[in-house]
Image (cartoon, rainbow over all chains, first blue to last red):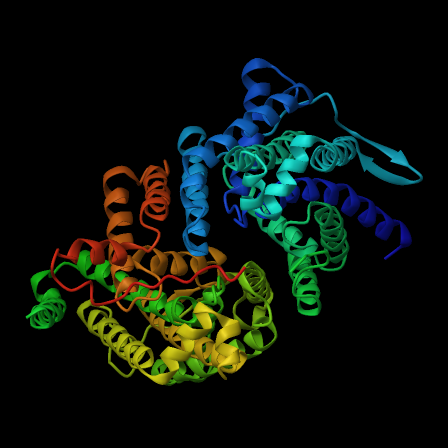
Length: 287
Length: 334
């Protein structure tokens, strides 16, 4: 195994890790706000990928142009899911919450299969395609674009949460929803916004992934599983921690994949177990 | 009066279950009931750890697979009777459960649940790549003469029916015994408030491990039954995370931490998936799954305590005593 192969795997891992981080950021945001793990997160990603695909197939829109559409659409979907389902179970036991979102996942996934069949689809000839050579390493253009855009989206999200007034209100709601309500923050609205933003993150990630990944109803499953591990690794509710978590997972997946492709996810899960057994609250968790 | 009516109802249901194979002679209705029994058994096993003790595990399939593989491999290699294999599988599952539980019970809430998913995925990948036990191809169990000792009945399903009913009754009886014993109180104390329980002298990890051992053993029992019933196992059918989630779902639908919730959940879920499949499915359109998912959302939103809580509310008459089974629901341990 030469140094180039390892360097290539590290590079691929870094690029995919950024996308994983963006997916996980949405999950982490929602959890930080109301301590609900959204088990339909992968299905939201799937919806975003299908939205991008259909924008290309029906309207001839390139994924680059579909990106803002998918992001906006998923923001709306997240908002609706909050209003329709989640706001009714805020005080319910954890298991009821888990299964509400799990039921939603089954519903969305089979709905996609019902409407669009389980076929694998791919956007043909997107604007960003091909690969180029950088210091002797091959870099896939769509992968690089996805990683850069994911980092940008991540930065925007971070800026929004920490620098704007609405973002601070969001943080205040996450810290103590009663105190926030007493300060005049409309917490219902903050929760809905959190779901909208969380879903918008996967909206962007889905549009970026649709550039180079097959689109099919089950596509969310693997990404969602990795996103849970990413979030738990970084510490539930810590949005910045998920970036490191995502990159770590991308690296481990690709490096283990070099040595034993069948065991790449085993490597990821082992990493998670090692980290939480050492620090039960994740790398940057508060509790 | 009320107690007598309940007992009468229980006896009637019991008699009906015993008489069922005579009423329904066709293989299909018997198969449906056998699957209800199997899911009820697995969900009850989950309920001991997840419901009474409050440790939400999404890794039941690990023990189901261990049960299925242990008896099958022993029978395939050395011709060991599946009944002995069942005991061996339960023993192995208990050992593995302790090895998993001892480090993982430090984790709380979602961290624990995700750890169990991770372990489930690791075990499934290991089984897929372990060629000695068949790898991804799985194991076809050799066909043997149909006797009780061989645990194989080919021509009629009634024998499987009674075996499943017997195993289910045993597991439910043991669960009720645990529920009423000191152990049951410890489990519920740990679920309601781990810190308070510990301060009152309940060793947390020890009793969580006991709950997990019982849960793992019963799940493995179900695994062996499945292997002998279907006579073919592979990692996709006995180790998947989706099975773990389904087991948990049956218990949640019925009512977490209640004695009869898992049975009710299994009956409703299997009946629902069968009817939607017959009426709407069979074309790969997945509309049956859509309804199924939608129903799960509705139950979670409108009846978070599960169907047992709904029954309890319906049974409560004005002036009469409250539903005799207090429906307790574990709070998130965050």
